[in-house]
Length: 328
Image (tube, rainbow, N blue to C red; front, side, top):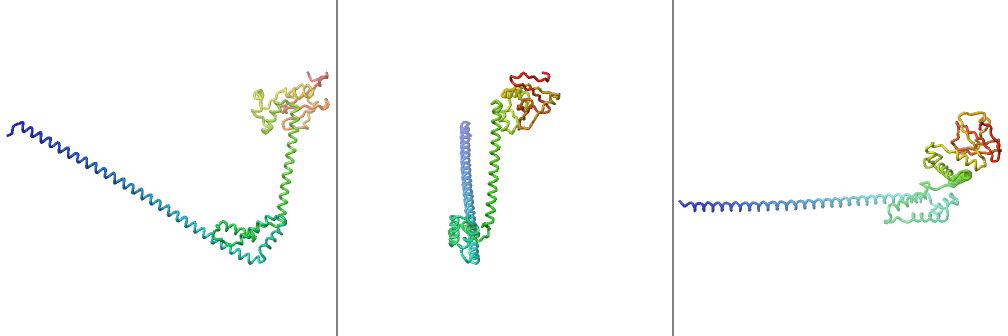
């Protein structure tokens, strides 16, 4: 039996050898796993690239096929339309040869005789040029639109569309045009008269009104005759939309060399019955009160003095000592 020291060394050597074997096996396993994962990733990437290339090729092939199909359909439609236009043109040419043996120039002269002097020399030359274009043979370079225009000119010349105007129709059109121009002229003259009336009215107001009041009035007139916040003074806003101060009336009377004394009453009295109020001259926003006792002098009253209020004017001319016996 070997001694203890030798046995321990053997055991330790066997243990180290076993540990080395385990480490070697684990490193080999790790290396094999890494190689397997790398191979799998490379295979997946190559498959994805192949699939994307296949899809792109399929999409490009599909687009190419669609473009080829659309070109073929467009070519077929173009050919069919061209063939149909050629057939119609040949048929119209045959119809014209049967119905119009006298020729194009006689037909054009007949059309000019129906229109009278409406057609000028340039228009006649243009019509002849269109007819010469229709006489030219059809070429392969003409588009369907050109053939359609040629066919339209042909049909116009044959009278199938009905654009040729007779002399009676032309005279009727001219009469309607003259009537429309006359109506426009009448409306323009009425507009000029209205503007002149407005100018006269503005001059009258400018003579008897202060510039601020005239400006406010013009603003109201431009806004449809309705008073607005922009056209009112702060005093008018506080007292009401339709309130106007009495200084306006006194200013007007002072300009007319008349000193007024105004009284507003709810109930009429004997003095009201004696005075007569005439409203012959009525404007949009003012009326005239005339007093026959003072040689026909007139006063412009603002719109706030309207029924049911009764306005009593006792006017005393400057330099006169006459008094009115109405309780003053």
